[in-house]
Structures are given as C-alpha cells and as structure tokens.
Length: 153
Image (cartoon, rainbow, N blue to C red; front, side, top):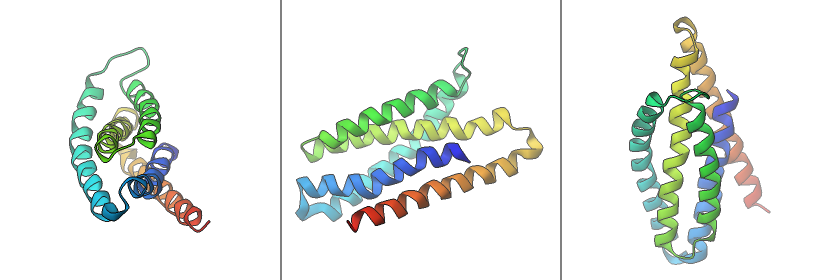
C-alpha cells in the first residue's frame, strides 16, 4: 500500500500542478490544447512502457533481485527528468522531457505491480492487489488535495 502511494502522489502532483503551470508559462494561449496533447502522448507512452519495462524487469537478474533495480533506478531517473522538465524553455523540449518522465515513472509502476506475483502466495494475491489499489487511491487523492490547496494560495 505504501509503494503505490509513494510513487503516485508525486506523479499526480506533477500532472495536476507542474505540467499545466509550465505550459501556461510558455504558451498561455494554447494551454488547454497543449495539456490535452501532453496527456494523450503520456497515455500512449504509459501503455507501451508498462508492457516493455515489465518484460524487461521479468528478465533482469541481479543480486538485488529482478524488480528492485528497476524501481530504484526509474525513481531516481524520474526525479532528474522532472528537474530537466521544469527548466525546459520550449514546448518541444518540455514534451520530450515529459515523454521520458512518463517512460521512467511507468517503469516504477510496472516493476512494482509485478512484485505481487513474485512475492505473494497465490491465495493472498487478491488481498495484496486490493492493498495496492488502495495505495494508488491514497496517493492520487493526497496529490489532488495538495494541489487544490496549493492553488488557492
């Protein structure tokens, strides 16, 4: 439950706050259509990234395990990419950084959800899957609440 909340809260915060604000800073007249375009591209990248990076984590063999290098590596990369995104000075550069961000953050999700079948006995997978879903709801709602309250300031 903690894992999905911990990656989803910052991700949702970036989507709800950072992305629209950066687009508005550069091109306020086209903000709505650009946010829609960024979101559409992000969904397509997430679709492919989850499948491809999940398969890559399935094939990984390290002394740290299959999933941990993907989770930690993609988390670190997502932080660096968000910093680069926040400093981008054009829509094209922002879109490129956002695409890379979506790729690496979905690498976290793919490896994290795949751990359920690795670590949880079959009879408990439904319960743990529910806990994962609850963590996603908590992370998403926490980010939404935070972004709404920070936008009022």
